[in-house]
Length: 258
Image 1 (cartoon, rainbow, N blue to C red):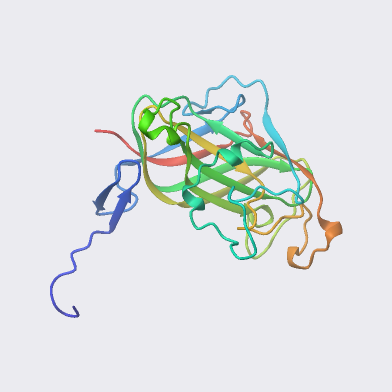
Image 2 (cartoon, rainbow, N blue to C red):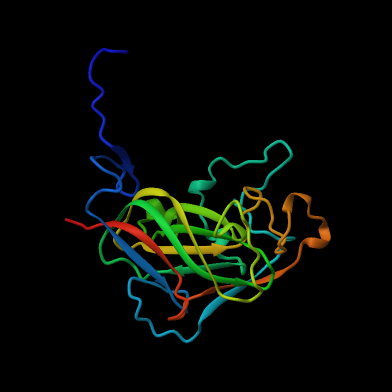
């Protein structure tokens, strides 16, 4: 009640998913969180080491505005146009698509806890002059889950997801076109998370260029999308680079295990 009692709240009172417990922190991100990069590589690998033997410099996919990646696998009707459970939906429907690139680690040898914002640092290109870039951080459950929890076997749980409309990569006030097929740096922050990837799980990153209809379709043409006509929409070849010169990665705030 007003002017009665003490509201003794910490700087951050956070629920940790994965272990499903609450934490009190005097600062956020926690002072012992260590910035830890995870590097993209060929063979769809995701690694804590930047010293990777790569046989290719990029992964590519075809982005078609006429067939955008949906935000959910749930069919919609005119009466029900939104799936409120999409944030905990199994993402295998997306990773099975040819226009979604996936990178994943080997099974973790110990629990890994993140606490704080997640930074996507990508080098990308598009054959058009604009494109969207969606990054989703995924917790992949092992295939050997006990029989009573079999439906969770191989489950791809989205921890966080965010989108960057490419033309705003340097400024929201002054959009810029892409130079077609030129590697371009894009950085953006995914929302904060406090999550533990359990031993035996894998960390996955999914990259795609549409997330419909959560976000409107990008025509891959540098233009005012809200006034674009059908002729402005085109298929684009998009690439995510992972060479020594253009090394894409995500950066996590990792709390070291006791």
